[in-house]
Image (cartoon, rainbow, N blue to C red; front, top):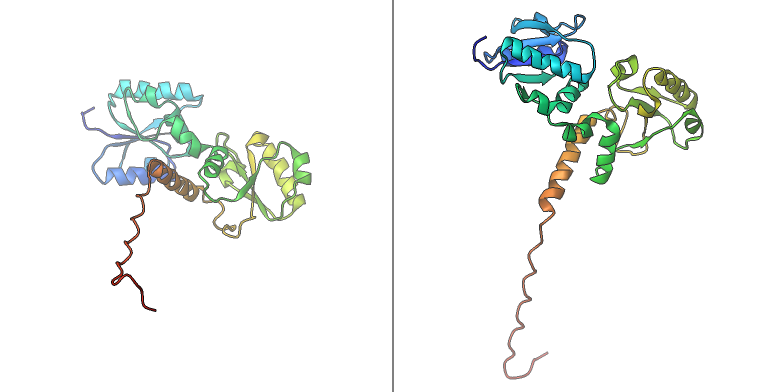
Length: 254
């Protein structure tokens, strides 16, 4: 390997293809690590090499990346995620991976607020950012008696488990029976405490815009910055009132 800094993209999906094209056009060496069934980015003319992506837990995958850096001399190459899960991996093991790579994600203490929607909505409430109401059912019995209007949306809190539910990102339910049926189906795919119910109680939100959590995160970031920057701000004191005009002759005519 030469000493040119390159990019190692984690995942060969459409996001990976976009990153490969963007960087490759700038003359940056691009490698892709991806499972055998997701190789779209591998077919890009800008992808110089495709590496296997192993199964296993986060720690074993992070160790694999360090092994690649050692074997191929990928010193200070930049790691790019292409999904929530690969972003979480790089974020959680940021200090470990930073010994050999440049990691493009934030550390986990910051990224976790965007990764888990339960934390995202909690942060929105703390920052007083308007967002749709969310119900967190503990079980099916709570859903049977929950006093909210329809339609609603079922959403996964994270994408830690790959399933049809997490791939779809949201399932609408027009009535109580459909909600219960959808809940039972989702419960077979992910832990029940990760199933969220979004409620359309605010006229400012509708079905078309309800799933845009990236926009919500942007509003939270703006609100947090404003609160931080204004925390020590004190308005200047008001100017003194103007002096009363002097009266001539000691009297005032009507």
